Length: 96
Image 1: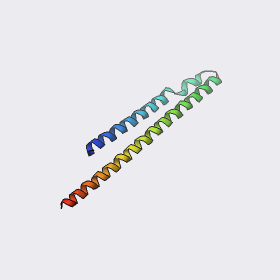
Image 2: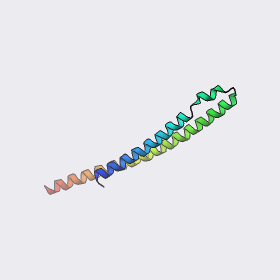
Image 3: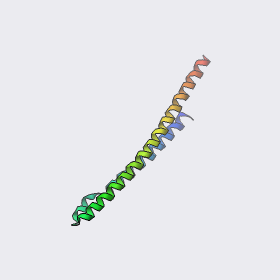
Image 4: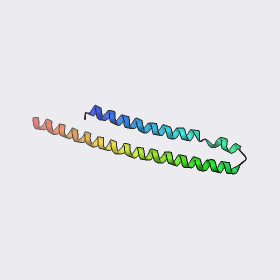
C-alpha cells in the first residue's frame, strides 16, 4: 500500500465515524425533552425519559464500538506505515 492509499483509507474511516457521531447528535436533538414536560401526566414524562436514556445508551455504545474498531484500524495502518518507512530506509542504506 502506498502512503496515499493508506491516507485515503484512514480518511474514509474517520468520515465513517463522523457519520455515527452525526447520528448520535440527531438522536439527542430529536429526543429533546422540553415538550414532554408540558403534559400533566408524570407517568408519560417518566416513560419518555426512560426511553430517551435507553436510546442514548444504545447510540453511545454503538459509537464506542465503531470508534474502537476505527482506532484499531488506524493503529494497524500506522504500524504498516512505520514498517514501510523502515524498509525504505533500510533499502536506501543498502544501496549506499
